[in-house]
Structure formats: structure tokens, C-alpha cells
Image (tube, rainbow, N blue to C red):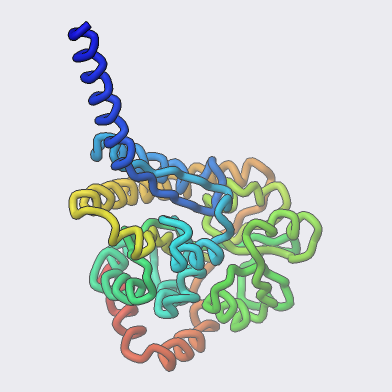
Length: 327
């Protein structure tokens, strides 16, 4: 009987010990707005797996895509309120809180993805991250959203005049609006989740997005022309709310930062690979694809630089110099 009591006591201790571990375990919710087939989701799952492995299961990340926690703007609000822990968000939505982020999308600023990464991983990115922290947002890493290209159902875009009168969807980002207004188009802000149907029904003539977003959102099903304008770069800011961040131990913070940066590199490589492979698939779907000489477009959008320099002063020439040095 005494043996039974000891065994029972031991069992109770083990159960209590397991309960203690369960209480100590933390789960962070990570939201994003893209589909489960997008490289952003693939890399998010890799991030979650790395965090779980490195923490021995004491820290887990629940990934939810397809705007389950709302669109990017709504997720930014949820982060700042503390009702969402983490988000792989968008440049346009973050710019609503940190306006300087908008300048990363200045027209034709970067020649390629690699030069953009050099800039955003350096002092420019650090400066923007400090401004985000003032708004209760911690930047874990700057992931990639690619360089944006134009699609439409009216005509190929080979010169600025071809854009005149076209109704193009743009994200909630004043830079995109400024670029296409300068080029004579009719920029129309619209939620990404509404875009496929709007293209299908002719509510808008076209849109602009990175190649991987175009393909994985199946816009090739509802667009006839794609013009490789390369007019605007965008990051994917990986954010955690400041309250959730403050509640983590230093060891947990280190685990998350390392995993976020490893997954960033993985996601960037997926993005690079996708540009070539997915462009061919878009062509195979029957979309007419054409190259674009950026010179005339760059000249037509010079006023955009003037406007944003007037707003942010020395930050704009500092960014431009960094972009040229990184090319």
C-alpha cells in the first residue's frame, strides 16, 4: 500500500510538472494576407518550425494566412492594440503608421532585388525600424515582396502614354497613387482581397504587383497583358507588437530574431526563383508579356521624388545614395 501511495505521489508530481511546463509554453499568433501557396506562407511555416525546434517546444507560432486576422491595414491596427502578436505585413499598410517607409517605393529606385536588400538590411532599414518601434511595432526582419509589374486588359504598356486613362488598382499606399497619377493613369485604391473579382468584372482595367503575387493570386486568368515595368520595390515587414515582445525573455527574443532572419533569407531565395519560373507560367497561361524601357517612365515620374523630398527632407537623398551604392 505504501508503494502504491508513493507511486501515486510520484505520478501526481509528474502530472503537476507537466502542467507547469504547459503553463510556461507560449503561443504567438502570426497573420498574413496572402494565399497558402505563396512563398510568404511557406517561409512563415519554416519560421514557426525553427522557433519550436530552437525553444524545445516552449515557444510556438500559429500561422494564419488568407487574411484570417483581417487585411494588412486591419492587422497593423490589431498589432498596435495588442490583439494580434505578429504579422508579415505590407509596405503600404506600414507606411500609414511610419510614413517614411513609403519612400522605399520611389519609382525605379532599385535596379534589382539584391540591391534593394543591401539597402534595407543596412542603416536605412535600422532607421525605419526605430521609427516603427515608436509606434509600438518591432521589426523582426525585412522580408521581400518583390518588384512590381503592370497587368491590364486594354493594351501592352510600352511608353508612359499607354497608361493614360487606364483604371489601375493600387494598394493603400500614397506612393503608388503618386506614381500612376504622374504617368496619367487613374490609380484606384482597393483591398487586395477584392482585386480578382474587380479585374474579372472590369471594375478596374488592371493592377500592379510582384510576379509571385500575380501568379499565386491567379490574375493571369483575368488579365491579357503584362508589362515588365519594374517601377516599384516593396518589402514585407515582419512585425511583432511591442507588448508581446516585452513579454519574452532575452533567450526567446534571440530565438525569434534568428528564426526571422533565417526565414527571411529563405523567402528571398523563393522570391528570386519565383520571378523566372512563374513568369514563364504566366506566359503559358496566354498572357502577352513585354519588356519596358524604364528611361521615359523614370523621366515622367521625377516629380514624385520632388514631392517626397519636400516631405521628408534629407532622408530621400540619403536613401537614393544608398540605392546607387548598392547597385
